Amino acid sequence: MNAAMQSFGYGLAALLFCIAILGVCHNIKKTARKVLKSQQPHKGDLSQKF
Image (spheres, rainbow, N blue to C red):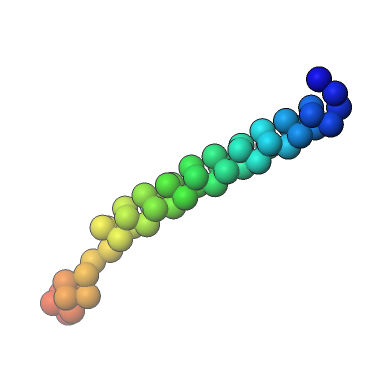
């Protein structure tokens, strides 16, 4: 394997790794948003307490 192909392989592996990390972060963000939204009181619930 020559140096150019090896460098291309490393670049491709790094790109795929970054895409995988971004996908995981996106799923974590979506899940966290869903959890936080379910814990917040609704506007109707808040106005009824006061």
